Length: 482
Ligand SMILES: Cc1cc2nc3c(=O)[nH]c(=O)nc-3n(C[C@H](O)[C@H](O)[C@H](O)COP(=O)(O)OP(=O)(O)OC[C@H]3O[C@@H](n4cnc5c(N)ncnc54)[C@H](O)[C@@H]3O)c2cc1C
Ligand SMILES: NC(=O)c1ccc[n+]([C@@H]2O[C@H](COP(=O)([O-])OP(=O)(O)OC[C@H]3O[C@@H](n4cnc5c(N)ncnc54)[C@H](O)[C@@H]3O)[C@@H](O)[C@H]2O)c1
Image (cartoon, rainbow, N blue to C red; front, side, top):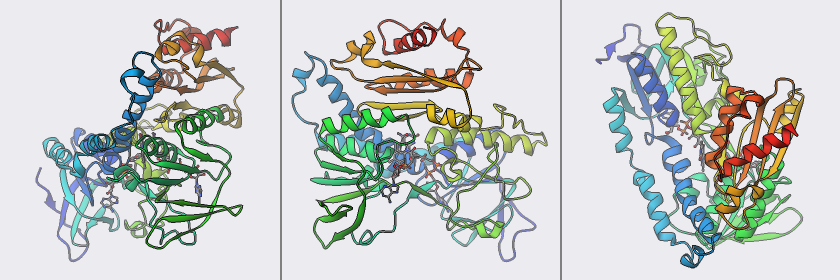
């Protein structure tokens, strides 16, 4: 593909013209570029750091590489016969070395080679929108798009405004996933997914971890029992979990950091991780040149076209549109948006009806998520509360996972719980939650049932194998049918 000189480039610039310009090469940008290319469109990707984005280097991959050995050890320790063979602690250096392998030592050569092989051009540098269908890279190279610009610039850690926070040099998720050193004492602020996963990982690596949670429980977006079971698991692992505890200020003067807690207490730690949510990478991407507000999340329609911009040429997918801050949902949106861009480029009307080829409907049905703690907490669809708030007539069906034969075989003292949320009018599932050791791979069965709107009467014929943890499906359906 030879980029052509654009005739109407903004004054002073010779432009490279493509069909599609993708801004940001995280998992979403890569997949969107791939789908645009597959639709026969010339495509260029602009990336300021590493192709692969947050997920590959400072989020999903390194965090899961840190957590997996801890889970394997905990599972072995629940098995007489096996536990005698694993008497020591984790080898932290070996865990960190494997984590480094999974991030390719923070080099993106492999992903750059994939782009080359796929026929997607790469421009390294910081891209900013420069009016309609144009992106200026590092203030000097102009890229224009015949059909679409897709913003996939993701997020960074959001820090609160707090006295002494900047001087305390807090860890963000980037430090927590890439540190080469195990701090002796680690304080973690937050009660969401990053906080609980990093508490589990660094505790297993040997840190004394204190988890400071402002709210009344962990994982507030899941069913309440998920947060309760994860809190119990963390406490058993030796994490000091403090609920309803806010930090009012921090002090660091070269040495350890001291946190002032509301209620008057103080906590000293060697590092403090702030895991208090995300902010969009939109403050310096030229949004003002297309009439949007810098720093805002980008609101999109079902095909991921930005709603505030006329002409249907601007798309936003992945974390940056705030629909679902998960890699798999970003990649899903990328597939949907890439197909929609292709359809519009061919002059076809996109199918944006619910569950249509160009509608990211799974985002609003409740995306699946696995929290990789011990126990794992997994959910898809709506919680009971969300379903009730949506006005559905629903019933929650619960079962104790520890009473399933496959679970008790999996490990002694297996503790866990499962819930289905049944829409009583349509007799289909609208939500499912499984919490327990090794339930991550169980979640997709529920995703298929929720997205497929499989009638309960048909699920009754979906027989789970004996003796697996999946037999909880049978117990749940028996409970529902009475
Ligand atoms: C610690 C942690 C663990 C996580 N674990 C999981 C998990 O297990 N499973 C899961 O599904 N999700 C997980 N997530 C969430 C997941 O990381 C994000 O949902 C995902 O990375 C979003 O992908 P994205 O492509 O939209 O954005 P990003 O991955 O953030 O990529 C955006 C890219 O755009 C680039 N960029 C930004 N601005 C510009 C610009 N102006 N010019 C050029 N390039 C630019 C950035 O450099 C970056 O490479 C985790 C998040 C964190 C913080
Ligand atoms: N396994 C996974 O799927 C996985 C893992 C990690 C992250 N992620 C995704 O990344 C995103 C970011 O995760 P996160 O944990 O940073 O955000 P989050 O929004 O899930 O949780 C942030 C938590 O911090 C608390 N908080 C906010 N401001 C605070 C303050 N000033 N003081 C104290 N507490 C405060 C909130 O109440 C909330 O509990 C999430 O949407 C998550 O889905 C996914």
